[in-house]
Image 1 (tube, rainbow, N blue to C red):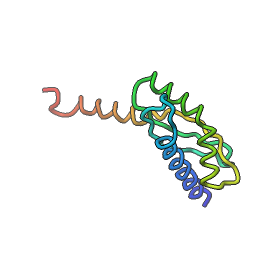
Image 2: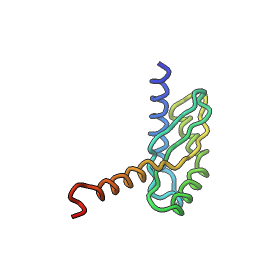
Image 3: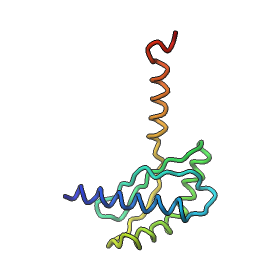
Image 4: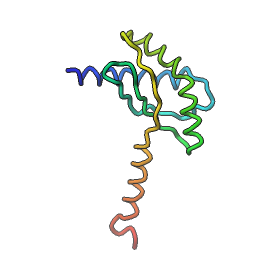
Length: 117
């Protein structure tokens, strides 16, 4: 039962953070950012927010810095909308799973049967 509750909390936090990043944040460092997932600790004191950033390493670093500076605002929104006993402290982490998936697709295309002829 606790697993289902944590999944609901993670999904609710992901939706709120994602919505407020796209609608409310005006920081120019935060470009095309997609929230791919959230992992909240069991005691609800902290949450790791996984984000994918369109662009290279400089854009990724700038976006993570912008998100870090906006974390207090986003935590306030989570507290307001979810009305949880504790509002988790947000930590933003780059999610490279999309980059890895694209690289795997490229490699599979290269070794495709009949592709080298």
